[in-house]
View 1 (tube, rainbow, N blue to C red):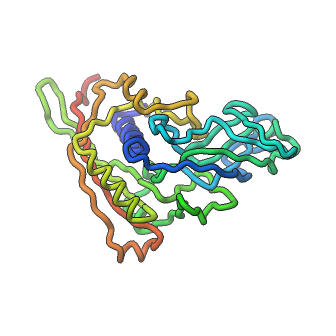
View 2 (view 1 turned 135 degrees about the vertical axis):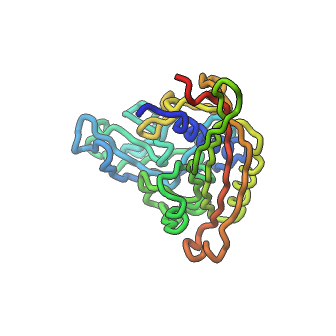
View 3 (view 1 turned 90 degrees about the vertical axis):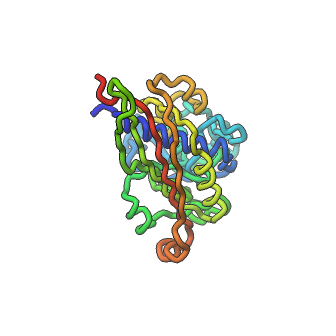
Length: 304
């Protein structure tokens, strides 16, 4: 199936939310730290695949900021590598096959460049970590809340991941999970134009009330704002979690968007918290909240 309107709309909404947090709320902190060797069986692994195999070194934090609109955020372009002689040399993206995985907070290297010590490199780097990770939910709201299986990757003193790095692909809190609850088309104008109502729910898992209240407040203040629709294929990250073009600016991307119609509008925002009593029965280390968005766009859904 080719990407549909709902696919592009949902991806655009998640990108807008991520941008809104790091740009308006400046919800990130700059970190410097070590990376730890952690094999990844989902990738072509070195030395099993000596020609194309990759090695993974993971940091203690995920996700990293990649939007250059966040002016004070340190967006990495490479890392420092000591291959064993005690000297750290800066390795830029592309050198030694270096990829930066912003989603999983790690670096990937071509193992062929380090045949003798691929699993014992000393790597350090600087990056900005988001205060709230943003995920497209792949589970039901009931499972998200009731199971509450997410480990807390604290932004202050990360007990989980400290000294070892975080496992790839694992979704960790603090986080916001976005999902489309339903879609309705209603008549809007003569000629077949409808108003498409998109109902999004964002479930927040925060490590303290300060972050939860701030995140929900930023969302509430977005009432009547516009969300630019971005082509589904223009999502900035590739299959390795690295930037497709080496850089990304949300403001430039929306300015250059060729989607027609271009703007969706936030017509309603409602927020609520889960009671402390229920929170303590699911995960006492997290505070939970919900924000419901109604996002509308006038369009011609039956046009060819």
